Image 1 (cartoon, rainbow, N blue to C red):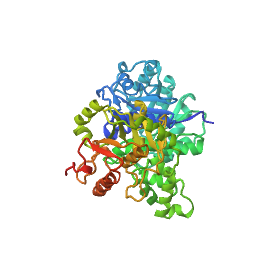
Image 2: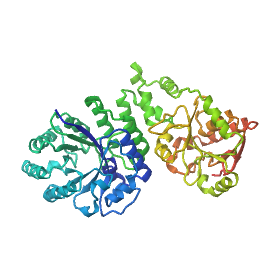
Image 3: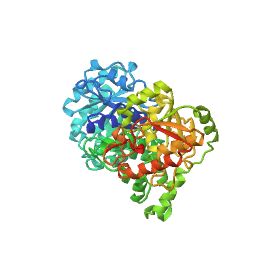
Length: 535
């Protein structure tokens, strides 16, 4: 009977070969926090490499002090946090004792001709208090005799684990079993055995299943990365391994957290430099459904990937594999239709907002280009500031209005750190420790007859009208252009918005006209809604 099986995430380290480890600070933090919340056992936070200067946007760091600058204030909960050193690239002088850093363990990768020196380095790290992993680069290059020599060296050092690294993705089950049996037969029983796959032959996931199936009295560790992110064909996908371990070994990893991290933090790197398999087909296959259902829900552009997964899970019977547009639309509407009693929330908001000057901040380009106007207005009038589906930098915000699940997922870590007051529509589901202060009925704020039923600006204005607010000021609510960027942050851009620019502008202008006798709207910054935009 095996002692323990553990799952290790290596996204921030191995995935860094795709983007030179430049995930961006917010992405790094979000990935880390979601992996923690998913309950993954071991998290590899990046490479320790003295040749690279410290950069808070990159998960490659010259020393343990730099790692603490990025991760030191984050809550790792029950996860073991590890870094990796490619032997010879980070001197022991750059490594603080384990008790003085958040890092619990260090994985040392080395080629077979350096195994003597590398295992000695592992011993030095172990003496500093770390759990040490000996990572056998290109294990398929080892002869049986070289494996026996490696085993002898490892038994003297007694690392936490020895891992087989299939550097070039050459392993099939017979190769894996051969090296596994050699290591298991020779290593002391307290030393764990690990496996790190590369997916060149698309065998990473299958090999991990084979590895986990070994019923032995020894810890077993398998590696994966979000969406298989890694150099070339990538790694074994973390979400697939986690799903298998939940079903086969009684684990309780939170797959939804992993999917949200893929959607919000990983996809932006996949498109310019693709690797591995495709989440689109993963969602379809894991729900036994026609791929067109996935495409239909993704085209909504307002659903988080976890919400899409939950809707697909409601498909049943013959309809699963026979695409029916009306059927999936009905499931979508039922899913979004989460009724709440929002009377108390509206009463509280009315007391706060009624008779106050209210400034609404959209994410348009003018939020930056005409910032001086906004700051002057705030300084002079001290308004209540409400931002729509984002949190602007260097501008005071009293409330964030959330109506888009996808935007919320991307914002959740930032909102938590800023302890923001949140007004959310009822289709948004709280994640982690984020708690919504006010929840409003989604169905009362959308327009089912419109091409885009859930226009976030109009939804907020309808909410304000319902609590008797009769005047608002708008900034960064620029409207839409078919030719230029519509957002101060180009990563927020949706292609379908440019395709529907004229429709969206005309629809919004008509809304303003329809409510003109109830709501006075003043634009602080240029907008297509009032003739202030230009192509």
